[in-house]
Length: 388
Image (cartoon, rainbow, N blue to C red; front, side):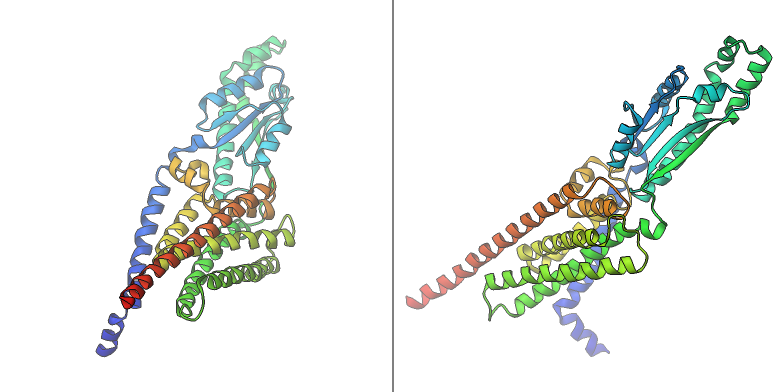
């Protein structure tokens, strides 16, 4: 055993493996602790819309009070339809709807006033949890406001006996209820986690594949040219992305996954973002060699934090929010949510992924050119010495 231990410790790959284990701990701890720091303090980054159709003045007063007291950013769209469009496009996290008959139902002794809430579930699971809690808080707030705004006086002005008006206004706090409805509902926690799972599995797989291709490239370097190896690796990426994405999409469909836009849309989009992951992860290997794996570990951790798969990007710091716009996982998560659960479409996400892919290919090709030139310089020096 002692001999075997000594043999292991003499191998550089052993130390690389040990150092990699340390780096995973360091990188993930630093990025996740800084990335999620202060998340609960940034709820004003979430936006809700309040639409009041109550012409009596009560609804407008309630909407104004909510806008002043809620911790979120509050907007006032012109109509429910406009608010629904923004909600569908993930520009809003919730719509609060005060219907036209709110005041009438609140004033009726045997009525029950309702406040409508619309939540888009095609979002990180945290959004639904936070907005559901906010709906309960808003309902309780409206109950208190309705009583505090002097509904008793309003009812008395409607020729209702004062004693009856007092009884009705006192009971309002128990008769204003919430009506929570979901847009693009997600069927179960297993489906909710699919976007994160697809990004995690795809990038880790691309990392490991890239590492092995780099080792294969070094092994055949003496027998093949740099550009032929570059072309072969690119072709392998395309073929592998098509095959791997087909397996992934097929398994998701076979296991009962929710696919709103259909199998072919899912397969095609997964092919594109997986191909992007492959070229991006290999870009660091082209530039830095095997040391590029450290950059891939960092990129994996950053993307899990900033992509919006687990925590809404609106709750992250400006640094991580800005960084997320440059990373492919952000667009992979958004596109997956649109295809799986429903959303505004994936055209913008596809365009961003293709731009990132093109950038990675250009940088990788530049690294091949640079390394070719640097490799020729020592050879030219040796040849000059031999001639002299």
